[in-house]
Length: 205
Length: 205
Image: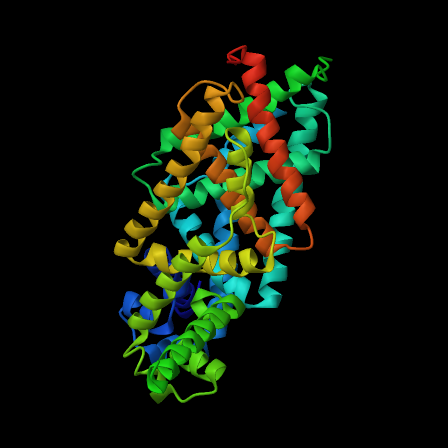
């Protein structure tokens, strides 16, 4: 591999790391060309080779956020309710990486709400998250682990619960240590399951 | 009342309205002296009489947000579960005023996460919200409407659920019309209540 190409790729990785660190530390709202340049120990001038303006930086940052979120290791779990639980645990800020990523997501909601195109993007992203959860809910229903009823609706409830728990845990980490987050999620899932039992709608295959 | 005082108070109300409108339209992240001046049809210079710098504006805006949130009309409801439901409905973006207010709250989380002092403020605010919900949960437990167990823990779950539902409804209003938000909340409360029934822990006084 020619040295220049290696240098270029290594520099790109450095830039990605710097953008990520700035966002994790200061949130999406603290992301500026100046802050990324300072993190890199480079001039703002150098950065304009990568990002001619703030919008280019924001676009890059949102792509990076999606890529890193998609690339996060996922828990393995059996089908049905166990898989729903695993997907919800994957969202919570239970590790440093998941905490950084969630801090950036939550702090990006302000930008998403201020820009109609971005609001649409986010609506699409979260609709896909709910569809993913809905498949797991439907599988749990097939196994008789969750009540019958619209799986999309149950998934929307579960998604609401987990997003709100993320917000609470980020804003008050002392009150929401990892074991408390997990316990609250399990309370939620128990309530869903027990609903199934009491309605007498479960069917064991 | 001397005319100058009336003018001054009327001008203060205008400034408050302008700050509010800018935040409701552009979110907390879009709040700048320039945007408030434009909304007022005034010069940025005039605004410096009220806000010598951006921090003064932010501080004012957060106070305004708390005051307006506190001043929002609240649903009347009986004790116990009905009162818990009413308090949770009061949080949801079911009206224009509640939607504006929630847009500002959600878009302020980025700033809250970026500033440790502000993070502590927010942690305190949300702890007080949970304490308020916890009292209602405890009353519902007394009435045998909710399962025994730590009311703070049940309140934390309910608070997580409602905050996440706010986020979803703001980012995707088409998928979360007001009746759907209410239905999802009622699903959540039914699951909590049914948990009480199936555990056989309810006691009717």
